[in-house]
Image 1 (cartoon, rainbow, N blue to C red):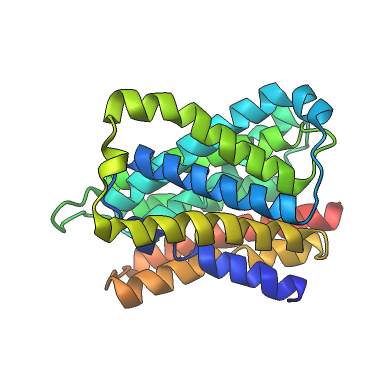
Image 2 (image 1 turned 90 degrees about the vertical axis):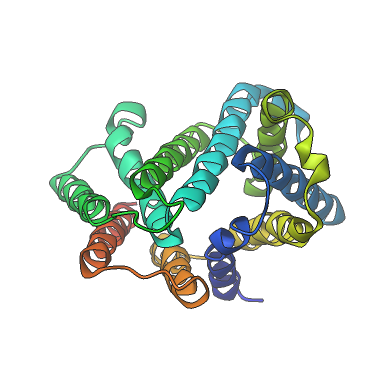
Length: 289
């Protein structure tokens, strides 16, 4: 399978996450824990089969950052899954894709990168887009609270942005080993909280939820991460940036087809502003590099 096809496949798989999460009868923290365990195991098995050796010396040197980023991944998933519970997949996905904006805003302070006028304009457009989405989300449907769901989506975006920034400081670790170590550590960090606060309901999940949680762990985490990271070294930065937007676009389309979720014109305009501004910023960054 070619690099582009692997990347597109990963993006399409990521775009269906919300559809599966909505069918799992567990709390968001329990789903995040199981996802981390299953996904981590799948990637460890792949690593063993491909004889990808791990340098424990390098892991030890990066242990603090790996722990922090692993915990951030776990919290990122929890807030994203909470967003799916309270608002539409479209709203949750678009608010989650605010992560590049957080990276842009924090980069001058953490990575010492210059915040150019073009990036400032991109941030302003993305914020305007978010205002369009929040301002046009009434949450009239039963059980929905769009403002709360979008807030959870933004919190997930903030934690994802922190993972992106922390990964910039990891040294001498390959993408695959970094990913499965972070997934396992995410599960380790979440385990005490889940078993203390939620109890052991995770072992009593309804049979109807088991296929969905297995697919989430094996396909949406293990397989999708493997396809995505294996494609990165063979693709140009611009290509990766453009293809990353297959995820939110496919999520919006899939939610409209299977869940009958609809977006108003103002929400569509907001989505275009968010995705368009972050895409322009990514393309500009990759040209500079």
